[in-house]
Image (cartoon, rainbow, N blue to C red; front, side, top):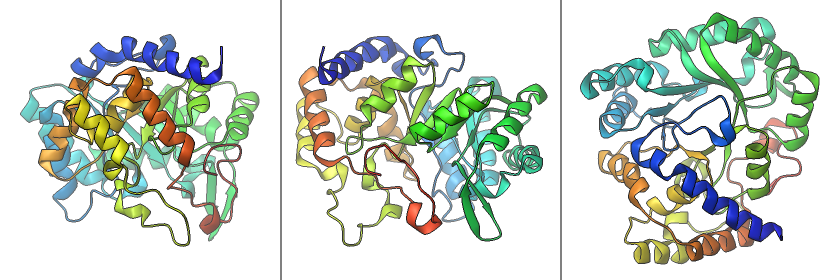
Length: 333
């Protein structure tokens, strides 16, 4: 079977397995992996325009029905996110155990002695006793203004966190195939999740399938592609138009009778990956949550794959600014 045909089949199989989970927000266990994460989540990157921005958005997301909240220390808003979680739980009438909450270890805390204190600070800021998943944000250690690829000792310190009960699961973000292989070969505990940039402009289909075959859950950040203003316009580069203004994506949405923003989210969930769109606008928070009601056809998936084949475009790549090699062997490196 050709790889492209296999990818089509895998996408459809993933849809059959995940459809009820998307609609009910019941965590899905891809390939019986021990970690369960709802496929539709709410991201909090850049929700920090004022002291109420993140807390109001998170509260509304939980009231709307989101049961997966993604945050990170470097976002600078975990105190506000924590207030939103507390208010959202109360407003929705649910318990802490009904939510999946992810946070991340930043690069300047890669020294093994800094790992647990960094998690302690995140828990203090969020107002929680534990988080569900703690990720190494990058395979990069930063110290005294210098960056280097360093992650094995940091990972071993993260493994020790599991015995404390402060996080139930651990994982990684933004690793290359070689880096992940090195991590697995040199340590005894495999990551349970890998968060990476994924959207129709950057499908990374073979990489996603590799994770699923090895029981590692994949979460897609920036699932709406370059709708995030942080990515700018790409100086001196041939950059694709904003994903939600792409004519093929808009045509798929029109034919399916869905808001255009639902199309990339459904595409991601059909592939068995979690997606974590963010918005500070209440109407978009609600609209994104309805993505589980949108149906895409086999032909729609082929059209979206064609977009990825044309572009393979990565928007988040700090390699040059950090003076390190990232994403070696991956699309858009």
